[in-house]
Length: 232
Image (cartoon, rainbow, N blue to C red; front, top):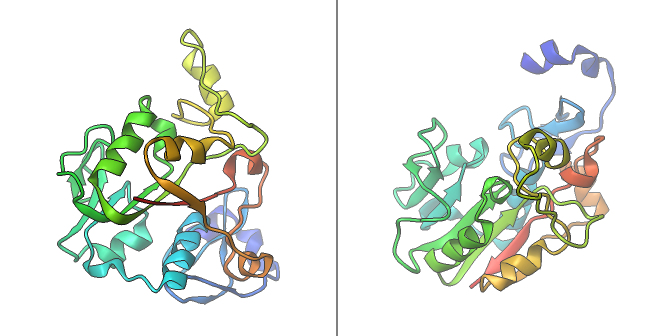
């Protein structure tokens, strides 16, 4: 209903059927703002959610009984895992889509506590991002896996950090709302500096179309989601 109210013309267009990697829904996906076919109408997954879902399916992973730390959880996964007593859905504030208050720069769990950690689009909001990465490494078990993504500008070799005296409005114009930096291609190097072994989730063009994994819109240079798989 919301999609019809916000953009009724999309229902007059013909779209190919997509397949959600999380809930298995097959059919047309819905537009989200300038992003065509971004949202699954059944579970509300978006592009990066479905990339994560593809990784979990490929790996044969079921996190329903694992010790998981999930920052600012995406709703499709929160619904899947919220009944798992070992699932910590953390946010910096009380939220309906969280079950704990967690500060990524000061995680109040013991070393090696979690089997898996998921951190999508968090670090661009964190002034001390390197400290946050080190904390994530600390609380992950040896052999554990963490998934990270940030808005990443592939045209930048190095992450852009604003000058200390730059007005907040100008930072937001360059980086996006509430963001404190704009990451470049060196983002995986920053994860490696925290101790992780880093690889990237890749998918074929056919998978990208079938599951609608790639964002297509005017903000693509900063919006394309690359998810990095980090092991300890």
